[in-house]
Amino acid sequence: MLSLESFAAERLAGLEARGQRRGLEATHRADGVWVERGGERLLSFSCNDYLGLSHHPRVKAAAMAAVETYGAGSGASRLVTGDTPLMGQLEARLAAWKGTEDACVFGSGYLANAGIIPTLVGPGDLIVIDELAHACLWAGSKLSGAETTRLRHNDVEHLDDILTERRGSVRRVLVATDGVFSMDGDLAPLDRLAEICAAHDAWLLSDDAHGLGVLAEGHGSAALFPGAAIPLQMGTLSKAVGGYGGYLCASRAVIGLMRSRARTFVYSTGLPPASAAAAIAALDIIAEDPSLCARPLARARQFTAALGLPQAQSPIVPVIIGDSHAALAASRRLREQGLLVVAIRPPTVAEGTARLRIAFSALHSEAEVARLAEAVRPLLAA
Ligand SMILES: *Cc1c(COP(=O)(O)O)cnc(C)c1O
Image (cartoon, rainbow, N blue to C red; front, top):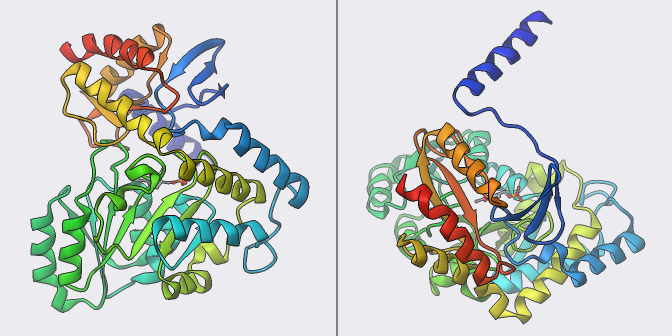
């Protein structure tokens, strides 16, 4: 197996030279925002747990009670014996919260997109996908075997041009985008995209991984555009909801089709009961407390105002550094000041756009955000 060993070693050395080698660091997340790494206590601006619900007493209690009642795992695919009664309750809650007829829970957001897209389109069909959309939308597109075309970021006229030119020669068309872009924090113009899709009989899939719980009083990015017809709304339970799992909210027929045909649903074990229970408890808190949901964006806007950056549209604010080594150095400088802001490098973002990706939480105080802004200021000038 010498060829395998030399292949892996050479690839790793190449990544190292480009500042793109990645490694794990054991991290004890002591609560929503304080973490312990390598004996240090750091204030994290790199978690997607925007509301701190992963550590909320009610969410933890619900998860623990579900373990006691239903066990640690679900035992099989949901279609066999893995459909704990909590799952139906969770799906009803998600559908009601998003205003769709039905919902379907998957093992994760990544698994959701890897299952949804190939269930709807295949060879002979066209997928148009925003160039900055999340990796799992691209993965689902690849798995589908449909022709995939890159949409210039948030460019609605480009979408209209593509559909005008291509719609007549393909069977079905799916248009996929993040609602909130995960590495840039900007929003997709879902209203305009929905209009153009409707005019060309194309199906719009929006990924609300970073919207649920933090935009439009917690309803998510689509709710910022009331009236926009978005027939396929997916997202994750692992960010603001604080646990784990993915979902699709859609019509009864579409969800029925997913339950019969989405391969990552049919052939993968159901979500652990504790994750379903935690998500239900977290959705209760989100529905009860709009002021909690509003806080991450307010903190992000405090930060962008302090530094004269464009106003934040979501709790995610990128500080573009450019070079991967420089982004790592910037992250190290913040860490020396007790602040954890992870550098995001290619291929997660485009070559030459390595960055600090700052994620604000409802648990950050205004004083802590001000402290971060002062620590980041010299990095902007550099
Ligand atoms: C994190 C993320 C996902 C994947 O969700 P997981 O539940 O973590 O697998 C999907 N889409 C976007 C935009 C994301 O940021």
